[in-house]
Every structure is written in C-alpha cells, then in structure tokens.
Length: 309
Image 1: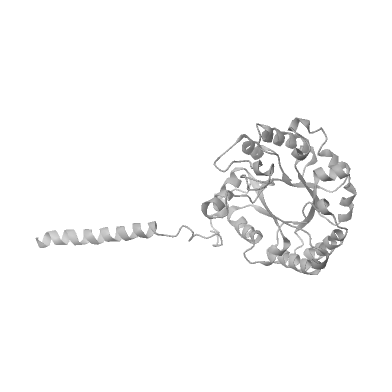
Image 2 (image 1 turned 135 degrees about the horizontal axis):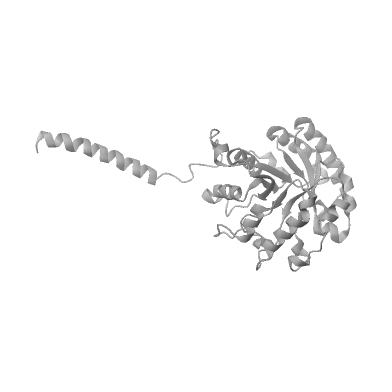
C-alpha cells in the first residue's frame, strides 16, 4: 500500500471511530438521566411556555409519574391553556424534600404555571405539628394559593375552624402574599343544607368548592338553572372551584363543561380546575373523568375546556 493512500485512510478511520463512539454513547444513555429535579433553563423557560389562563387549570394527573409520561403532562396542560396546576394530599407530605408539592413548585418555574397546593386538615392531636409544618412550607416556597382542608364538610369537626384561623395568621406573617382558602364539597353542602359552615372561616381569602353534579343528576340537562349561582346567596366571599368534574359518557362531559361555563360566568370565580387531564386509576365514575383518554391527543371536552372563560 502506498504512503499516499495511508495518509488518506488513517484520518478517515479515526473519524469513523469517533462517529461510532458518539452513536454508541447516545444509544446507551440512560433515558432517566434528565431527571425531574434538574434546574430548569432560566433563559428560555418563559419563551417556550406561555402563561396560560390564570383562572383555569387541571390537577396533577399525568398518564404515569415516570419518564416522558410525567414531563409531557405539563406540555399538554399548557396546550389546554392552563395557567394553574393543582396538587392535593396529606399535609405531612410537605415535610419531605422531594414531596410532590415541592416538585410541582419547582417545575412551575420551568413550565410557567401557578401551583395550587391543597392539604387536608389535621386531627386535634396533630394541630401544633401541622401549624409549624404549613407555616414553614409557606415561608420557604411563597406560593400564591394554599388550600387548607379539602371537602371538609364531608367529615366536619368544629376544631377545623380554630386550627385554620391559627395557621392562617402564621402563614401571613411569613408569606403575606399567599392567598389562603378552604374547600367544601358542593353537592353534599346542598344535600345537607349546612351552608352555615362557611361562616366558621371568616379569615379565608376566598372559599372554594369541589363539584360533581353527576353524583345527583343522570345527565347535564337535568342540572337546574341557578345551580351554581346559589352559592353567591350563601356567602359574600369570592368563589373558586378546585375540582369540576363529569364522567366521559356519550357526549355528556362536553355538555356539562358548556353548562358549567354558562352558569358560572357571571360569578367571576377566582379560578376553576378540572380534576383530571388524563384518566386515572380511581373509582367509578371518577375513572372516566379525564379530558383525555391515555391514548388521545385531543377531544371535544379538551377543546371546550381550553376555550371556556
């Protein structure tokens, strides 16, 4: 072989080995290397993801909590014009450094949404620990929305209002801009006619409700006019909806979204949150309340929720 040919082949061989190493490296890279706790790119986070509607959102409800299923949830939520994403869970979760609530807050900076954090209220013997945990969490995270007590009229205890009042004061000391609220279940409130419970929470910045009329009515057209405006006759506080749901059956979910929107528009709710972006493994009929089935990219309900004001 001539020297001239060697001078041509040797650099070519080196170049081919380099390309092979790059390809093999990419093929063997662990797909989980880009973990969920990495620091978001501060330079392009606002450019990639618009704010969305600050009065509308969905709960944290991905197809699964691993890999692309989890991260793609936030992209799809932005497609639904969601300016809010909520998490609800046990208050003791807030003690953990890697709690879902803290992960959500961290990701809110990357995906440009406002987190809504909701916890249950404690038993009487946990009150002091609860107040310390919640106030420390508020101080460290400075969230805009913090819900204390979820559907509290389902198992109401008089001590809730006292605990709420005390922790409200502690939160305001360390995070004065945090808006603090509690949550009632609307259908149970109507059935038991215990609207008077709202007056136990005078300090609340606003009052929120979960609403699932499918518990009472067979089809959306049965929901009477004034179903939601009744709330404004029971309290002067501003209203929010942390869970608004109807099962995906025939075209009922889409019909319900339109009806909910028309009935609540004049109430000017602070925000409204659909409970599931994707179907979740929960009990019937809540298991079919996702705006999307797991294999769907859009639906009539998804598009309608995207458009409501």
